[in-house]
Each structure stands twice: as C-alpha cells, then as structure tokens.
Image 1 (cartoon, rainbow, N blue to C red):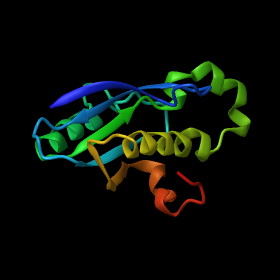
Image 2: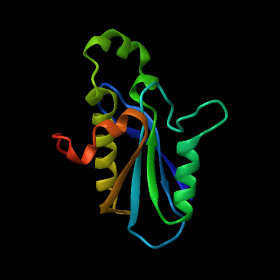
Image 3: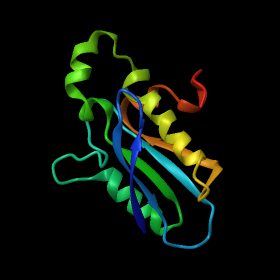
Image 4: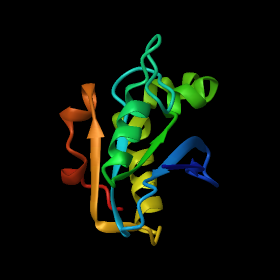
Length: 137
C-alpha cells in the first residue's frame, strides 16, 4: 500500500490536506473510492476518540486492490473562515464541492479507472446522492 499526500482544492480558498491510498498490487488501473464526511468537523481519518474509520477502510480496501482518497473536512481545516460565513454555509460548501474536487483528482490520475470511482459517506451525506446532484464534475 502506498499513501501519497495530496491537497484537495489546491489553489482554492479552502485547500484540504488529504491522502491518496494506492494498492501495492501492479494490476492497474484501480477502482477508487472517495470518503465523504457526514455532519460535524472531522479530520481525513474521521477520527472519533481512538477510532479512525476512514483510515481503516482505506487500508482494508487497498489490500483488495481498491484505491481511495480521504481528506480533512473543510470545517476542520478552516474553522475560522467557516465561522465568518456560517449563515451562508450549505451542504454544497460543506462537502459537495470538495467531493467533486477529489473526484477530479482521481479522474486525472492514470493509475485510476475513471469509470470505477465511487463515493463512501455517512450521516447527512446520504440525504443527497452526489451522482444525482446538479453539479458537474
């Protein structure tokens, strides 16, 4: 397994630290998943006390030949900027835009099969299905 540091939203107002986890097997291109946070502020591992579910899932999927991206949530990485615009902060700014940026990273990586990119999320992410959103990637 290879874990590469990435920036989701590089060059934007809200760059986010992240990791692209690539399987060590040589069978490319790989399918990939994007881990999208639910409500609340979270780091890229979705750490809750000693549990790191996104990290555990990324490592497990990698052992089965599936790449993944996980990244800090915007409200975790930029809490003071978010606090200033909180009344205008929607699901689009909280999660959708960053998921689209992560999707574009995967689509532009020759190691990833662009036809096999999936979203894994929890909590309020399930209320809106990214594949049905009106936002274009």
